[in-house]
Image (cartoon, rainbow, N blue to C red; front, top):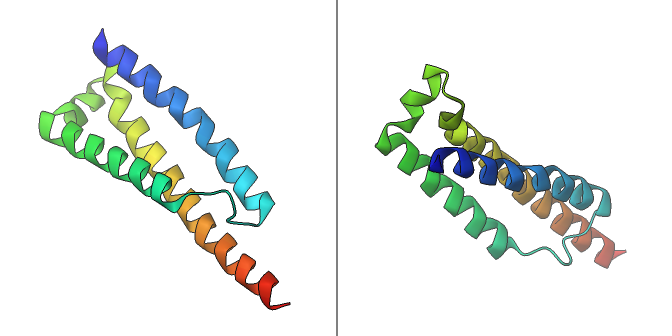
Length: 101
């Protein structure tokens, strides 16, 4: 049962990242975005993925048990946070260009 709730938690977190990515991309500024926050979140997802790999849940994911898909969603969320970090650096560069003008 705890695996089901873990999966639901990670899915719910994952629903917010696309909104964050779109807002940051369209906003074209790094102001109000914390690289430390994004990095901490990314670190947490990476630790969770390593934990899943070491605990054997990654192999169990392919058994068809829906509760074992938590690792897939950790991977997906980590990818989305990485995209948010890349957009942060893009927006930071845009901020610097706008300051020059």
